[in-house]
Length: 299
View 1: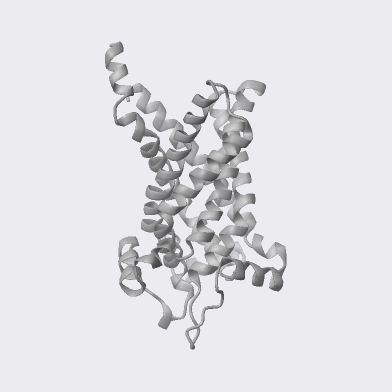
View 2: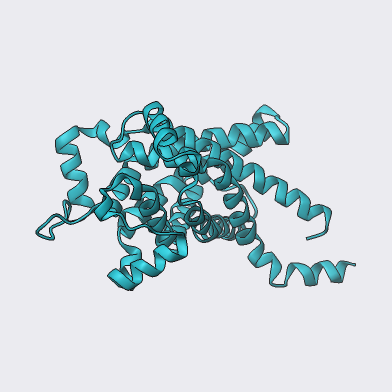
């Protein structure tokens, strides 16, 4: 039995397990959060408040509009979250080994989160671009709409019309935003779990809910300015002369700062926070349940 466990722990599954679990939990959370994410994108595109956006979508497009881009959202989680959560687990495990098995200080967790976010965003950037374009399509004039039918059709059209490298259009702000988000989300979650378990003495369920709520807030606060710039870059269209409104993420940030001040970057923060926090909570809860189920069946 001991030899069987040793063989199992040294096989392929333990290495891929954090990636599989991360992707599965992220995809399950996305199925629940997709409508809120859709409203957040419409607010950032200047269509009004959360209430007016919701009413207009229901009136003009119907309930299905809230799930437009779901296929791209699931593909994004299958790439981005698989890579970031799997990478974070591997990086923290290596760091704990180097630290003689002692808990990591917050700054090391933050560094692991930054690195995992960069890896995940690089892998998931094409799916993220497809998601943003599908969600923003209905806001464009009819003549400018791309009319993607699903995520794979969007990726095919982007490659055919704009070239392979266009899949990473806006990847710079996407990676920076992911690094900020994951630094806030992953480091604060691990730190909060340790605090609630060791100092407060909460049970497992209360610890997961409390820690994920804290990490959701920090993820939103750290990442929204970068998310705003990323969305503006990915949705921009050339004018009649073929000139884009922004030359890059820095140009977009400076023009936004000049036109609307620093708080412009936090447009839609309440909805963004409401979207991020529940997604984080459900991702951790689903991950916790998946790990429990795997323990029961000996995986």
